Image 1: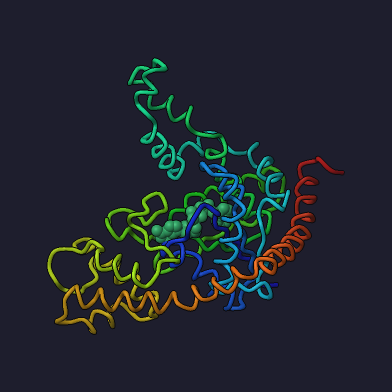
Image 2: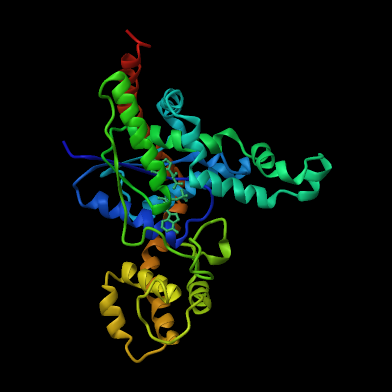
Length: 352
Ligand code: AMP
Ligand code: TRP
């Protein structure tokens, strides 16, 4: 039997180049390597932890599915499904909740970052109107503005993975801490109730943390759209964004994360999309300036995204077939998880 591989992406808006180079491109390569039994899903339950408009949600779900298929995920080779259609994810999440220490979740950096963002958006005046003093208001504001789902997010993610007996999880670097928690929970459950789960390992790409175009000290992230290159950007937009990308002092095209974070980030994009080593790209641009390099990089991106964008257009015309593919994937995932959740309940003594 091949080792199992599981990963998901949240339907929360447009995908950017960080999602692609850190995750989606890798999903396709791993699928096509034929070395794994692959499961890829749309993490719609996770996406409910952020503010959303219910009229947009199903469109966002279909858009992620179209992105999956346009990038090359193939329902003949992988099981592609919707998280919320598989009840065992939420069931196992609940069971794992009961062995998860509160303190572990409090330490999660994604939780801290996300609540910090919420806090920054909180209207100070509004807080003051409610009469909170400034010393206690930080913690209190976070507690008031944060939903429990955001706090519990990593436990649902652990359930997503452990349910499938996944040995490998391809993700970007920002998910490593969640994966570590997943391993901890697997170990804890196994020692308490006997061996039930596999401890999964992450699979990172060469670009596990793509930085923003406008500020190479910050991660490219949906929460800072000004620094994102989106997979749907037109050639004109791509040229403009790359032309305006922040570069460093000096004029050499050389990989040096510490002294040249801007150029280094752009070199990573070039290398990953053109399947060319950084050394070879540096050599190609000896004696040339940032302008020449950026022009060439924009062409590389446009060329790399062209087939993907074309596929997306085609798939968008045929939404019924996209929905059908999700239904088929859901059926397969239901079958597998239905068996596993029974085993889990037996181990705990809920079924006899
Ligand atoms: P999300 O959109 O948060 O569901 O993320 C989808 C996938 O993209 C996850 O595996 C993330 O770790 C990955 N990812 C998000 N941002 C970046 C980035 N800037 N660089 C590399 N990978 C990323
Ligand atoms: N938390 C992941 C992200 O934000 C998405 C996700 C949910 C996931 N469940 C997962 C990724 C299970 C891998 C495996 O990117």
